[in-house]
Length: 184
Image 1 (cartoon, rainbow, N blue to C red):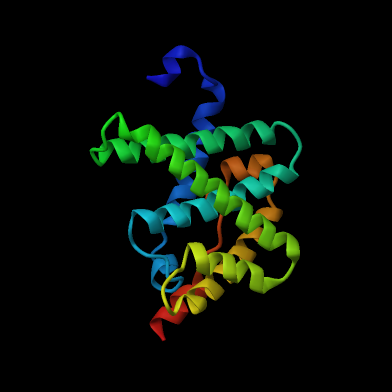
Image 2: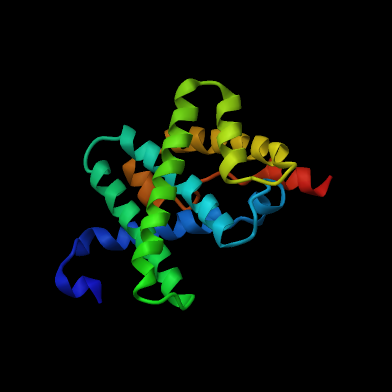
């Protein structure tokens, strides 16, 4: 329906495909089982935010039109979250309030993860993930594993150019360590 009005038609298809791969990666069971992310709406939001953040961080390093793609990706993410609220039966009046809160949470997480990565101290990312994505009492172990996963994901994404980001089947490494910790 939105394409009928000519809004970035040519770019929307690859953006939607990219977002679908990001969303799929954010739902890997090992992230929830070993990484301590709660299997709830909030937990799925936290995992999605982490994955979108990692891709946005890489897009920021790439030349144009990566910045446009980054904005389109954020727009797709929020459209997806809004649709989730609507499908859950949230009223049309309440959706904008929820979206405002979700926006604040999303950008707060992005700032926290970016600040943690800029310090270069691994403990800062672990703490940011423990506070947000893996809040269980024993969340420090889950946050440690999520931080290792995020580091591997960053290293993988660093090797991808814009074309590879748009077309790669695998954007994120398998959370092998997370699965191994759960099986132990």
